[in-house]
Every structure is written in structure tokens, then in C-alpha cells.
Amino acid sequence: MSRLPLVTALALALAACAPQASRAPQATPAVSAAAAAVSADPQFVTLSSRWLDGMLQASPVSATAFGEHRYDSDIDDLGAAGREHALALAQQTLADLEHLDPARLSRENQVDYAILRNQLRADIWSAQNAQEWARNPLLYSGIAGNALFSLMARDFAPLPQRLRAATARMEKLPALYAQMRANLDPALVPKIHAETAARQNQGVLSIVDEQIAPHAAELPEAERARLQAAIAGLREAVEANQHWLDSELVPKAKGEFRIGAAMYDAKLAFSLNSTLSRQEIRQRAEQALTDTRAQMYAIAREVLRGKRKAPALPEKPSPAQQQAAIQAALELAYAERPARDQVIATAKAELAKATDFVRAHDLVEVPDAPLQVIEMPEFARGVALAYCDSPGPLDKGLATFYAVSPIPADWTRQQVDSFLREYNTRSIAELTVHEAMPGHYLQLWHSNKYPSVLRAVLGSGTFIEGWAVYAEQLMVEQGFLDRDPLFELIHLKWNLRVIANALLDQGVHVDGMTREQAMHLMTVQTFQQEREAAAKWVRAQLTSTQLPTYFVGWQEHLDLRRDAQQRWGQDYSPARYNNAVLSFGSPPVRYVRELMFDLPIQ
Image (cartoon, one colour):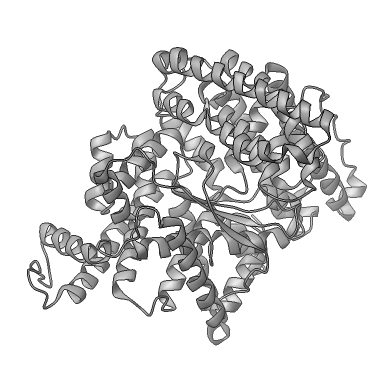
């Protein structure tokens, strides 16, 4: 899972927020026929730059993450004026954009035109239909946590400068909490969203206690006093917000977490920017589920043959025989797992192995930027086990974070055992390939080298997540971990997770899938442990249309590679292909195909 680009956060922010002092967007002059006859590139650059500047000013917290630090002392305004401003910005920019003839743009700008148009239409649709500001408390807790974490996590400026910005933001966070309480309608807020927000609410204080307060001595006395006053004010605001969450929002939350077919299909089209429909995704996922289980059974027969108490291993098994054999083979992999307090250390060790392997096999250009394996910040926990947090495209030379959530201290021994069976040593190797090498860390480093900041800011989640899943397959194909069959089995199990993600997301939001049905899909059909499946059930309720990005992107990357192999023939090599794919930033995969093979930009 990648935290950059902040596609979801941007969609929410653009639909919901702007700084208090912002003005209404100004119209872009119509492009003259004479100018268009020559080239529309200058007009597009001006228009897109104006929108990018306006968007970053309207979402200061996202701006910091992207490396734009002019607004580091501000936070997002989620009040009515801010929402109206953001909607007007998107509507005006879309109207101006549609005055341009994309045929008069360079090929690179034709792609950026298409990406920007899709984003603007998504922002307008979200503002007018999704209205996350009224139904999703996680929007507010996410902004609050990132407002401080994005300032303190990376050394993009001297520490006193970042502390002053953090002080200013802490002074403004109580107003954000007030907007949260004013905006949210308990009748629209799903119970699961309210409960998750209540658990995350105190997390912002851990950033204060661990990353801000210990450095107060870096400031002069007057500024230190202001910092301490801001911290005290924030503590009071967080406590007041916690009381409201616990006593008002959680008990009264009655919203429906399922968004329904009409909303889902519209959101899916914007989210994926793909030619695949919901129905086509389901058909491909169901076939992939059958095919992958057959591959796993073949490996199970290999690793179990001759073992005492092995289950029946016929060439053509019944469904029950296939299930038993795969489960028995997986148990061999589950037996090798880290201690409860060694998950992060294991991730670091697997990262070193993966990096050495990629270099030794010349699979792709390896980044020279630092990568740190860290404990996931408390405010971000509860959605996924791990994520990759890359520096923004405007920040250069800063560290990427591979964040891993620790095992909760209040989990029982049975829950811990379930977790470590799922995240056994081989699974942590697979996770590390996905999040770091050659997955998100490597891909986003390449993406941030691409000169179009617009394309980096509007990076495709389908391309990004699809690349990370493709990277897992690439490493297995190339023989990572000495072609260990149990690692290949775990890899295929992870493929089943990706497949299940796609089926789960539309099953939950469109087909009314129950928790029992979801748990059967995950724990039986795709062999996930109870703790993993339970967490994914929560994630499926909290989010929509993000889970399919893994499967759809993976399928699109595999289709693109097959095309390259056919076109290039003997000139194909993994390094040539991988470096070529990564050279265009992170646009939707269909645009990579058109750019790479010199096809018309659709």
C-alpha cells in the first residue's frame, strides 16, 4: 500500500477544503484559434500550473507531503467556504481545459490533459455526490495527523523552522476539530467509520510527545513558550474531541457503509481510469482465483509428497482434497515466523536480501535515495499492516519510509498467533518486495524523477499498486530466495489476496456481501488468517474502489509486458522493459502503453 500520491486524500481535500484567505479562482482566457493552430502546449502549461498552485494552496497538508512548503503553517479549511472554493476551482479549471484542443498538444501533454480532466471530473462528482465531509470522520483525523507528521518526519528544512510550522498548525487544529463536529451528520456516518476515528483520535498526541515536544529547546524562549501553549491547547482539543466521539458520534452513527451500485460504478471509473468495467473485473478475478488455486495445489503436491501424514494428493482433486492439500503445504511455511517483537527487524533483513537480489540480477535501476523501515505512526494504524511513504516530487534526496504496524499490545496470544501465521517470514519477504524493493519505494523514486509535477501529483493508484504486485511476480520468476517452493506458494497466496480484494470490494459495496461471506472468501477460498481477514473486512467498510487497484493494475501490467515481449522479440529483457515502463512517471497503464509503443493517445 502506498501513501503517495495521496489520491484519495486529494479527492477529499479538493472536494472539501481551502485555506481561509483564498479567493475565488479566476477564469483562464479562451485559447485563440491561431494559437491553437500552432500549439496548445503553452496554454495547457499555464492552466495546469494555475490549478496545481490553487490545489496545493487549498490543501496545505497535502502540499507539505508533496514537497511544497509555502503553506506549512496552514491547515485545510473544511468549512462551507472552503468547500465552495474547491468546487469552483475544479469547475472553472475543467471549463478552461475543455476550451483546449488536445490534438494540438504534445504527446506528453495529451496524457497529462487526460489525467487532469479525469481528476477534475472526479473532484466535482465527489463534491456533489460523495460529500465525505459530512459522513467520514477519518477525513479529519487523517488531516490532523498528517498535518504534524509530514512536518516532523523528514528533514526538508532546519528543525526550528519545522517546529515553528508545527506550532502554527497545532494552534489551528482545534478549529479543524470544531469543523469536524459541525460538519459530520451522525445519520450519515457509518458506525465503523466513527469507531475507527475514535480509536485514531489520540494518535496525533503521540506525534507531539515523540517528535515535537522533545525538541522544544531548539527554539528561542518566546517561541518555545508559544509551542508549549499550542501543545496544551491541542491536548485540550483532542480530549474534547474524544469525548464527543465517544459520547455523541459513535452511539448515534447510523450511516450505511455500502455505497451502492450507482455510486460505486461512477467512483470506480474515476479511481481506476481503466477500460475494465466492474463486471469484467469480477470475471477476470474469478478465473484468476480458480487458476491460482490450481497452481498452489501443484506446488502442494511437490512439497508434501512422501511426508508422513500428508493428505491425499490425487492428480485431479476434489474441492475438499485441493483445500486440504494447499492448507497442509501452507502450514510448512507458517512454521517459520518471527517473534512477536521482531516483525520490523525481519522486514529490515528481508529488505537487504531483496535489494541485493535486484542489483545482482540487473532487473531495474535501483534508487540511490535513503529508505528507512519505521514503526507505523499511531494515527495511521487500523487500515493496513504496512505502507510506503515516499517524499513528495518537490522534495529531493529525502528518505522514503517503509512503515510497519506493530502488533497491538492488547492482542491475545491467539490473535498474535493468527497474525504471525499470516505474516510469517516468507510473507514478510513478499510484503517487503511489494512496499519497498522493487515495489513502491523503487517505482515512486523513478516516478519522482519524471519532469511533470502534475503527473506525479495525480499519479495513478492502479499503476502504482499494480506495479508493486507485478514486482512480487517478477521476483519469483527471477528466482528470489533460491526458488524456494514454499516462498512461491506464499507468493501465490498473496496473489489470492489481491484477487480477493477485487471481489471483496464490489461484493461489499454493490452485492451486499455479509461479514460471514467475506470471511469465507478470505479465510477459506484465499487462505487468509483470521486476523488478516478481520482487518480487511474493516478496510473494505472504510474504503471503496481502492482495493481493486491492486488486481486491475497487476493485470494491466502483465498485459503490457506480454505486448512488449511480442513487439520487441529478442530485444526484450526485464531491465529494458522495467526501466521503460517506469520512465513515464505513474500515469494509468493504458497511457504507458500508448507512450511506449508510439500509439495515438486516447
